[in-house]
Image 1 (cartoon, one colour):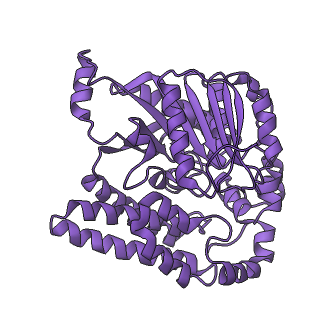
Image 2: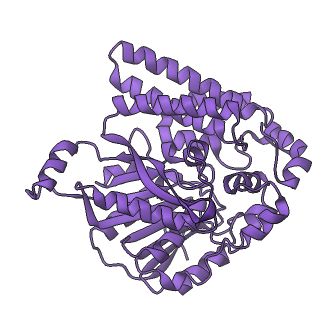
Image 3: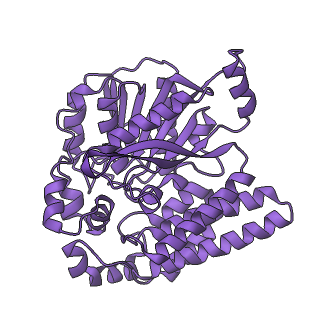
Amino acid sequence: MSQSRARRMQEQSWMYDRLIRFGGPDFYWPMTQEVLNASGMTGWGDVMSVRAGVRRMADLTREMRRIGDKRRALATQAAQHGHRETAAENYFVAAACYTLAQGPIHEDGNAENLALSACKNDAYAQYIRHADHHIEAVEVPFVMPGKGGKKIRTILPAYLHFPPGVDVAALRREAKQNKQNKHNKPLPAMVYLGGMDNFKELLVTRPRDPFLDRGMVVLAIDGPGQNEALISRGIRVTESNFIDAGRAAMDYLISRPEIDAGRIGIAGISMGSFWLTQIVAHDHRYKAAAGYYICHENGMDTIFNRAIPMFKDRYMWMSGYTDEAKFDRFAKKLTLAGLGARIRCAYLSVAGEDDDLSPIQCTYDLHDAIQAPNTLVVYRGERHGITDNADVRADIADWMRDRLNGKLLKTKRIFKSCRTGLEVA
């Protein structure tokens, strides 16, 4: 574990060991559930092993790394025997576990974090070699301010996923030659943002992904302050530089001849719902935006000062603050005030009625300010992480495909029950 930055994190650390002992490792966000969401039931046995093995906060990294090492060894063995599908499955789960092992570490230059990052990158590179769809490790050009007004040219690391069965080489060749036909034409695409603790390796899921299944190309990216962008490139998150990251991602996608520049959307989970709102309010090239497990509160008082302090501690690291008073002043700048009226694309939020990290009234207020067609789906009685995760992602993928295909949208609010998945009053 790294040295805590937030005062409450230091003072209350004893509580977390007790919470874990009685409630398991998912006490502050569904960490092991993310492995299942990303990998499918193939990860069930390992998830149960982690849940049994984690008895205190300090165990999280060790147990997740143990599963990552196990899965990577199984993948290597399968690859040696020519078992491509088994190798892909295990390399993917290994990368997911290494990513989650990094989660509790909030420290620059931490040797263990750097080692885990290297393991994760290697496992994912091997997964790309064995995957059943075309994936490219790409570098999105990004410019950030340096000392003395100088501009620093760097990159945001990302993975570009194409739907299964797409002949990318043929698509690229014919697009460049302007020889499109109804069977081989540029594809719709979307930028995908994680949150504070959900990164690009976990966004596109196995064995089937709802966005790829619906014919969309997905650019899964680590933005400012997120995982590799911070660890490898030193890119901190500021109050507004996700706007630049969103522009950079859009510029990259429209530079690809395989992508239909008129059909590009953006999706974001948790804090990603905040960042994507900033992005589409300033970049009107996006056709649709969908955020879920929302963070819409201006100033982020609930998530930083009332929720478990792991979130504040992490965002302090992401933004480069060690002085909590200075960070508190910075956090007040994290606001969506005035941005709703600037949004021109179709906009979706999927939220829990009793969200414990962002009051639902903040989301109502945001949608009231949006004049473009928008949909707000609220799950009755649900908190930040909505229980029926698989159906939520599938519904978002359906909504996104409809928007990118030009289907008209009427503004509405929908209330649902997770028990039935159906609309309720």
